[in-house]
Every structure is written in structure tokens, then in C-alpha cells.
Length: 99
Image (cartoon, rainbow, N blue to C red; front, side):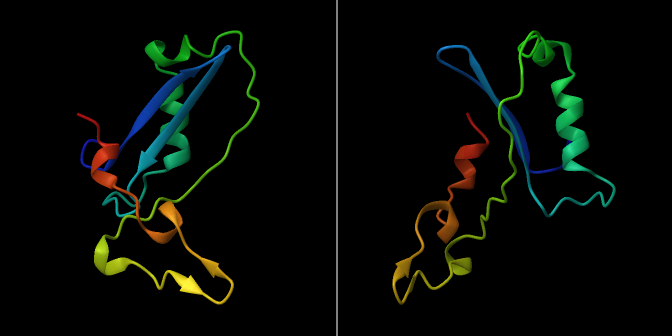
């Protein structure tokens, strides 16, 4: 994953929840990379695994983050609706990388 855009996150939420995720660019060069397996591998790292010990998974999901930029924005309005937020392509992917 060294040359692949993305990263991981781990947040603690009250009262005793842990939220985790993996962000990976879909334009990765290695055709054998498996985002699901990479996420499972990350969760077994000793520094990460300790946050899950004794816990139970209560929810999971997957999502594609589109980050094509200004020239990739779709038509935002249609009869009876409007696209907003990440669905419309307004994701600021540079902020995902962190400091």
C-alpha cells in the first residue's frame, strides 16, 4: 500500500464505541490488491487489535468516495431532487490524508 492513495482511521466514540475504516484510491497500480484483505490485515496489527479486544461488531459497511475534482462533477439538479455532499463529488480528498 506504500504507493496507493488512502489511509486508515480509528476514532473512539462515547460511551464505548470504536469506529474504524480504510480509505483506498480505486486507481491503485497493483491489480492484486484487495481492499478487504488489507483492512483485515490492518485490524490485526497489535497497536490496532487492542482496541477491539472484548468488543462486538455492531455495524459495518462500505462506500466509494468519488474525488474526480471540479471537472468530474455531475449535473447537480434533476426534477424533484438535488445531489449534495460527497454524492455530488464535493469530497475534499486532500483533507483525508491528514497533516
